[in-house]
Each structure stands twice: as C-alpha cells, then as structure tokens.
Length: 541
Image (cartoon, rainbow, N blue to C red; front, side, top):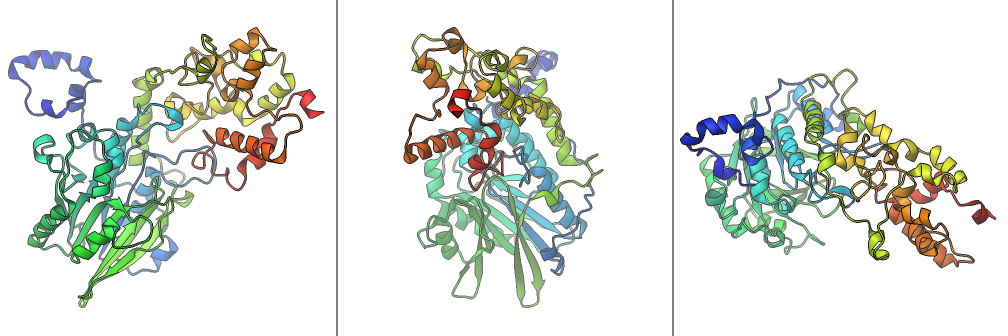
C-alpha cells in the first residue's frame, strides 16, 4: 500500500476525477491520505488520587513517563478480573499526574503493534490497531516513540503510512535509519526536544535500533547504520540545543547478566552524557528500579526496562537543584485502580477512540474479511471434508455432556461480547470472536450471528472440532480419536495421566492464557476443569 508516493503530488489534470472518486477509494491508500485527522479533545478530568508513593514526593520540576512493548494491547484483553494494562488506564494515570500540576514528557520505546493475530488469526487488525494506539499516545501528549521489531514485522513503510505520514506527533525517532530521508521523508527523525509548560527542564530525546534488533528485522526497505555513530551525532545536536536531560530510546535488550556485552550498557558506558536509557525488556515483569551505570566523573546513566504488553509505566521524577538534577523512580502497574471513575466516560478521549475503533471494524466488516483456513482434520483424514454442525446436533447422543455445557459460561460466551461496553460491538471484532464462537477462522465455522447462529458461543466443536463426519458414522474410531485426543485410556499410568492433563491444559490455554484469564494460574486446569468435565456415563463407572 504505497501511501507516501501520493502525498503532495496529485496531478492537477486528474483533480475532478479524484474528487469524484474519493468515496469509492475510502479503503485504499488514497482514502487514507485524504482521511480527516482525529480532532483533539479538550483536557479530560479524571479525578483519581495520586498513588501513595508519589503523593509523598515533592512535586517534580519534570516527570519522564517511560513506556514500551505494548504488543497491540489497546485494552487489557480478557474475561476475568483483575486485568492490568490498556490505553484507557494509561491515560488516566497520566491525567492524574497532570491534574496534580506535574509537567510530563512521555516517551515510548516502540513495539507498539502486535506482530501476529491471537489464536493463529492472520494479523488483519495490526495496522489499524497501531493507528489507534498512536492517536491515543498523541492525546496523552507523547513527545516521541521509537521503532522496533514489531513495527518491522508489519513493514516500516506500512506502519509509517498508517500514521506518521499524516500526523507528525508524536515524533517517530530512529537516528540510525540510514535511508529515512530518501524512503521516509519527514516521517522519521533523529532527535526531538520537549519542554512541557511550567517546567524549567529541557529534554532532548533520540533513538537508535541496536545491532541485534536491526539484524533481526526482516524489512526489505529499512536500512540501519551503526548505532554508535548515530548516538554520537544525535548527542552533538542535543548539546547544541542546550538540553538539560538527554534520553536515549534504545531498541536492544540487556540479555542475561548485566555485563558490558549487553548493548544498552555498552552504549551507556560509551556515552556518559546520556542521562536516561529506555531499552527492551526480555522479562514480562520489569525491574522495580533502574540499573544505574556510574561514570568516573560522577555522572550516572539510568537504564530503565518496562516489561511487556503495556502493563506498567515508568515514572522518573526530576528536580532542578543548585547542585544539579536529582531523580526519583516509581514503577506503576496499570491495575483496576486506574479504571475511569463512574460517570467519567463521557468525553473521555481514549474511550472515544476505542469506540471509534470498534465501529470501524464493524463498518468495514472485519468479520467477513477474516480468511478461513482448512481445519487440521482434513489433513489427518485425506479426502474428508468435515463441517461444523452446531452443539444442538450433539445433544441426542451426549445429553448429559450437553447439560454440563449448557450450564457453563461457554454456552453464552458470544452474548458476553454482544453485551459488552467500553467499547461496544465486541461481537464484531475478530480478535474477540475467535475465542467466543465455534470454528471462527476455519472453513464452515462461525461467520456472523446472522449467517451462522448455530455456531455462536463456545460449543462442543470449539474443542472437539467439526463433527459432520462423526455424525455420519458415530462408531468410527478414527474420528473418535481425532475429536477427543485427551480421552483417558483404560488403566493408564500416573505418567500417562499427567501427560494427558498437560496436553489438555495446553489446549485450553489457546484461549485461557494468562492474559485472557488471569485466574488460570497455580494449576488453573485443576481448578476449572471440574466445572465443565463431561465424561460419558460409561466412563464414570
């Protein structure tokens, strides 16, 4: 989707045709180029208290907000509580600091989009989710974001065309993107400056893609030069602009032990004038304090890691004292204490964005656009074409199992999406529907509630697979084994039983992973399985 080639050079002779055809091109790159920018909302009052730890701080002269590795999580995904993360809660946290009079400079390391869809879905929604994420960061007042592996997975050309081509804020930084001027003009920059109103502190920000990440990027267009040379050049520019704090967004991890071999540590030691480095975390849970690199001249470079899926925010307070700048750090989880208070949703800019996102999915019929693949059963039994038939077809022979299912949460899983709000229309979102219906993404599986009503909810075939061939010959052991690979064997050993339950646990976690179901920890299967166990009567004997 070549968007940049259209920007600013539409041929005058085609003007009438272009104007006449805009509506027809709404889904193309031209339609996206002509898209009306999202209007900026006035400041929204949240009215939440400062966290106790921050309430004890004197008000900083500047606060750096450090985030990273969102991985496409616009919202905390899941049907259990408590959940952590999401852009709404991040907005509320930042708004709370601003309501207390704090001056903020938020920056993000990148890896904002998802690099693949959930539960083996194609990444149909990756770009649109990136666009809404960037719009949300703009509303939060972000000064800069970097690029990362997840952006490269979607191709940097596409990522930039989805947002930066049309909107320069927040600035996208990658100082060592060697061909940024030729391939991505006025979309990627080396540095940016931030000095929020009311702060005496001027922040200079740059970003580089470390050698390990640059090597892992399989983007055929983006070319990266030496990160060390880019850092040196950027720091010279920031010195010329007389900044007080120098921040480096470093796309590279402190791998294993914190040694000189780790790229961010090597960068800190090579450039003691860097005050703060935000780098990639290999752990899901980030450290509670920065790694301080102390230099011979007394200066300190603070290296911060933020963890995965946007569940945490690093908060670095800065005070300007006669003897120099002083720092304090606080790691904040985005738990349910940052939910929007009752009555505060009207006019909430991020919630409005999420609602707009849900409506765009519905309007563009993303359910209908999701590709349908062949079910693995077809490969297991050549020339077979099993189809989904719906749970009601199972009731006649499996009446007791049907009653267990009917009384479970699985039997109304689709309705929970249809009834959802914040945002609404979750039943039109493929990434939600995949775990709330039968066979979505497979041929003959769920399409939508109108076309395939019998496949709403998590039914028998969600776990056992399409059962048309089994119905044709209910005694065929081939299909028995395919449809119930977790069935206990007669006189199985303790080891065999353990392996069987591990396989069952792994299958259930396709949807009940620890993001979607935070209660699926500490032997989650052992706690949940008895609620839905449905052996046939002869298996109980």
